[in-house]
Image 1: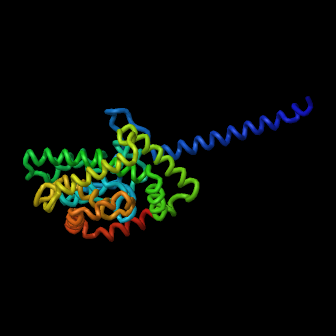
Image 2: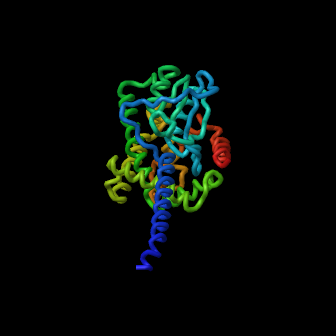
Image 3: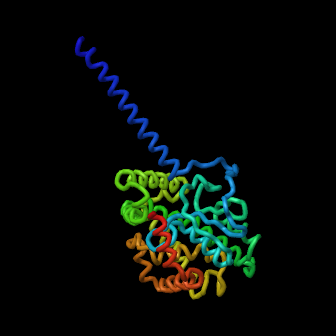
Length: 312
């Protein structure tokens, strides 16, 4: 009886400390989730934020991801907007996105333009077409239909295949993490915290992929889908200078980022190896180089500047 009474305070102390540690870990997890995995807003509810201080009229302030590999921003949608801004001669400033909770659509990239926060790259471009140069004015009705169909393939299918091979496939996730750590090593603690953050993001991506549908397939089936998408793209591009002919259009603003991803990001060579022997692969490289020369002659400087900025 005495031993039971003697150990009781220690049991209370042990239980109290265990509870404290548990809630501390839970609070830390929730804090990381709020930063790296934003909670969805109710459908149809617009998020309102204070105007950006010291902004200039008719200048776009683009909030996008840090660079990774040889890519000037880690998201193809960020490069999509930058390409459109340069095609339409719209002045813009690039800013590193710190927290997507600030985004009107709870995702990046997003912009501030003439007193208004805007999200979703398609909606942003449609808005800018009405207030600046419409680079698609020359398209026929058939070409507009093709543009929409190909945009959906890039953004709603090929993109999600890329998500799997970037954030879910273990080998590619390790490669991505090692590359990103070169950039963020001075911004975050390495080790356990970084592993935990990547684990949270990967877990969230798996859930999104499952909800989207592609996450219900095995890897062999996903590789077949990837091959079909890219082969169709190469066949459609053919000998054309741009996606829809001899002139660039808004479709090229999303085709170009994926061309860079396929041709320059040595992230999953086992998946892209078949492309290197494809008879039309060199034409995709030529297309990528053509777009880069036309609209991003300063690519290497941008990559260096943004990498240095992200490491501060």
